[in-house]
Structures are given as structure tokens and as C-alpha cells.
Image (cartoon, rainbow, N blue to C red):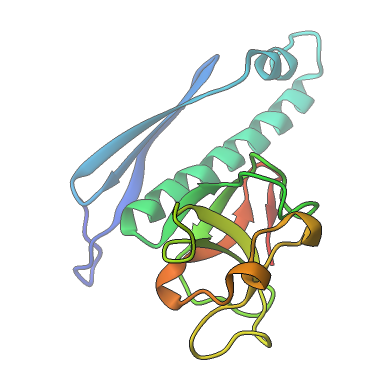
Length: 184
């Protein structure tokens, strides 16, 4: 493991290799090595590496894919540090902002007004689960967070369950990997 000049631990990507149908990323953090193999869809590979297409277009598309993979690798690196986690949207309570099946990068921090947050319903319902909602600072108080889904007609949120205490907070969604956009 490498250390910086001031003696702090460093994490780094040791290797990045791109193969025909897979990308390999080796991440090292505190003497732990993780090798990620990211499968690419065959249709996408055929489209990107079609020899009849213009060489410059293929090069640009490969740069975009590589950039996406680096962002994904950084998310995994920070996940090892405990600050960033991955989550998947399940359901339609956040339509149209987030879609069912979207993957999110979640940062462990206190939310600000209008942030999209991930919470657990532990203590609110008999079956604890994670939910994705929008945080409203003006409706919250010192005892808990007020959250609502963007799709008001199809959302189990603070209007039914009341405020959520700080122990229920999983984190704030900062990036939607599926739609490749930052969230606010």
C-alpha cells in the first residue's frame, strides 16, 4: 500500500484493462485488492467496435465508456472508505425524476433542502426496507426528517409514516448512474 508524503493512506487503481466483452479494474485500498469485471452488452460492443464505422467515432465512444468506468471505479473506491455506497431504485414513487431500476451513488452526509435521500423504514413498519424520497427542510424539525416522493399519488412517505429520525438516514443520492446525471 502506498502512503502519501504526509503519511496518510492512499487508495489507487492499479490496472485498468479493456477487453472485447469485459473491462477489468483492479482497485487497491488498505492492502485489500478488488478486481472488478464489468460485462458489456454484446449489442453495445458490436455497435461500438463495428469495423465499418468511422475510426474517430469509435475512439470517441471508447473515451466515453472509459470515463464512465472510471467514475464507477471511483464510486467503488469511496465505498471501501465507507462514505459512498450504491443503491438501486425499486418502485415508482420518485417518477419522473428517478425510474424503477436506476442505480444511484449515495454519499453519507446530512441532507440539505430538496436533496434525494435514501432511508430505512425500520421502526415505522413491520417490515424494514429502504426507500428513496425527497427531503424537505422546511417541513422537518429537530426530531426528524420530512420526506416525500416526487410521484405524490404512488408514494409511501412522511405523509403516512411521519418524520424519520436521523438513525434512519442511509445517505444522500448524488449521481444517477443509469441516467448518467448528477442529482439535486
